[in-house]
Image 1 (cartoon, rainbow, N blue to C red):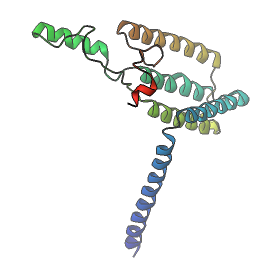
Image 2 (image 1 turned 60 degrees about the vertical axis):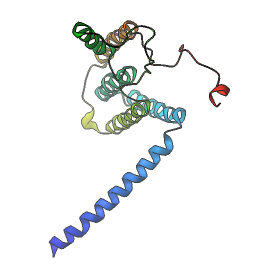
Image 3 (image 1 turned 60 degrees about the horizontal axis):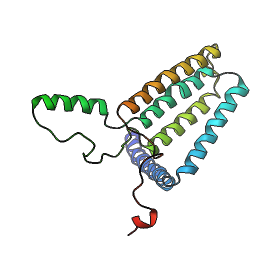
Length: 193
C-alpha cells in the first residue's frame, strides 16, 4: 500500500515541477525584450548586496567570490568572441602551408561579432549569482573572517591584469564587442523598405 502511495505522489510532483518550470520560462520570455529594466533590476539587487555587506561589515569572502571571481568571469565571457580569432588565424596559417584557402584580406565576407556569452545569459547568471550572494550573506556560516583590504587589492590587480589582456586581444584581432563606433549602413527609415 505504501508502494502505491509513492507512485501516486511522484507523478504529481513531476507535473507540479513541470508547471513551475513553464511559468518561470514564461516570466523569462516576457522579460527578454526589456533589456534596460532587467539591468536596472540587477543593478538594484547588486547595490542592495553591497549595502548589506558594508552595513553588516562581514561576508567579504562572499562579496569577493561574487564580484571578484564570478561577475568578472561572466563579464570577460560577455566581451569575448564565440570564435576566438587567434585560434582561427593559427588554423588559417596551417591551411596556407597545406594549400590555397579563402581570401583573408579586407575584401573578405562580413563576420558579425558573436559573443561567447550572450547578453541575456549574462544578465540571468549575474542576477542569479547576486541573489545567491545576498541570501548567503544572511547566514553566519558564510561569514568567514578575512582581512578585506587584501581581497580588495587582489581584486583590483586581478581586474587590471585580465582587462588589460582582454583589451590587447581586442586590439590585436580588431574586434569591438559593442556597437559604439561601428559603421551604420543607412538610416532606420531605409531599413524598413
